[in-house]
Image (cartoon, rainbow, N blue to C red; front, top):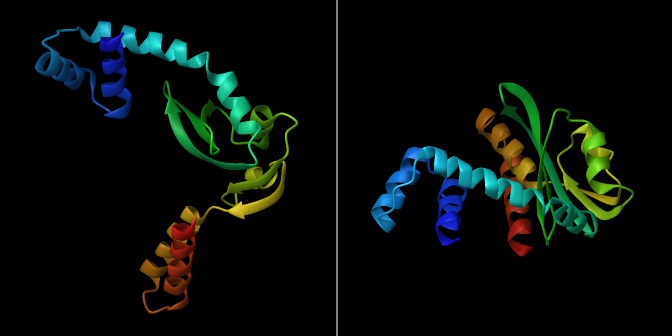
Length: 170
């Protein structure tokens, strides 16, 4: 169990390649595993993790505040979307072929949260929520682009400082 936990840690947390994982296991533990064995451990860990998805999804959906974002990804040579739903209790990753509000509905079910934090993407603005908060990290990035393009403008720098102050207060 410890060896498998170490393999998962090296691959998922340290982002080591199969070859680097082999080298680390040999150097640290004197253990040689083939890349196939490492892959088999990762597949088993992935199947075990899948069993936890409903509980994670329930923890997110029952939260008062949900932070959500989506970004493009490649899965088996096809374009897809990685959706991330975060709460104080849990983080849920979903890989989907669509960027539509249907993904949010699938995850949230009938639940309406108090606050939905996201960028201004249309599907996000349709999320079931009483209130909305624009993601300050997205706003900081957009302000930085404006500062880079127009360095003489003062207001974007001042707004960026205000957002950074607000983030530190939280």
